[in-house]
Image (cartoon, rainbow over all chains, first blue to last red; front, side, top):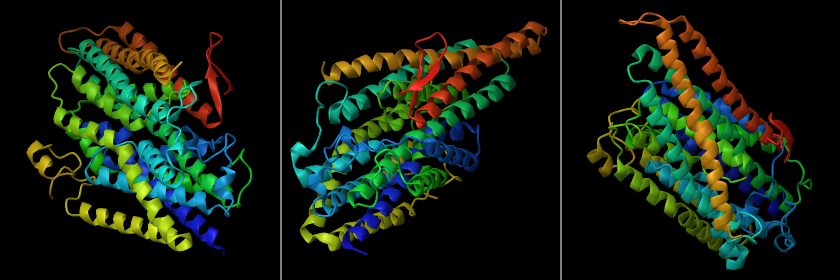
Length: 405
Length: 94
């Protein structure tokens, strides 16, 4: 095995690791409301979401290899890596991708530890941007596109992130308000059962859409790495094992359930009742599908959070914990730069050691960081047993991740 | 046009589609539940048989909306998109 092959293996493992964190970070987007209202038992909810993510990932027949082109310039427009990055056998490109992925995973794990729903795509883009700036300089980043379409960091990441929670929030608030107005005086046995199915249906659509959208990103990144290392040449299709392993990784992550984030979204932000849950998930599903149809890519996380907030604003007399919302918005704002800083740092470490040893050190730093955060999370575990416990704001503020058990 | 222009242009379309499908369909669903409850009667109200018919008609519209959503997801997985150029939605190449 050559040095490049070993680095390639590290990149593939790290990419699948990112896909796994992407899964459990986003379970909450689809299922937090159904779990909080008791429409589905927690374990059933994560199993349903996991299966739908698996199906959704396999539905990705046409996978774009140009994921990274929206924010960085390491690929040509047909998806092949830039020649200047592959002249040394591909390891220049592999190091950028590896460092970027490590930045995204570390940030995803950190926000999970704090129970904050931050965007996995922002973490991925942030990591790649940081590693690219470190490796290629500022000019390696596609900041603003060329003005012919929505493109670049500003057009594909920053503007959609500012607009999407507002859009989803307005839709959910209008839906919630109207649903409450229309069902005044209707017997509880009709509303509870009806809205239960409404929630399950809309949450399932969100899960399926998540599988098709998000698993694709990792498939594209892994295939890019394979092409850079000379192990794959076709830019029109991807190897089947890449598709299968990415589908399994995101589904397994989803099934694991990021209980800390589910708790924050389902119990922390708003006390959700079944009509609100249905309004919130319908809003998320419609906004996500409409935006992907119109080519205006939004982050599922921002949409889902905006929807749940909106469902709190729309219900007369409901309490919205704006302090929790404020913490989330703060996490969103710093996700991209923070992942970028970690990605850049990893690139400098990998590059100064150089070669296989550099890549190995970066990988080991990731393993150590992940292990430390997992160990830390065990001090205040949140799982399917206590995910719905009463939200005590004073206790949550001391230890934002959850209640002590 | 700048990125901001493109973003705002996309945003209002998403908002419009979101309001029609994301708030409109749940409202029809809620109306369906109301009709269903009216159809069954209960308390002091007498059962109204038409309620059930109206309810299922409303649920059918909601199901059509969900099927549209499913089609968008599956089509995007195959690199296709849905065209509304004709009156009915059709699957076309992206």
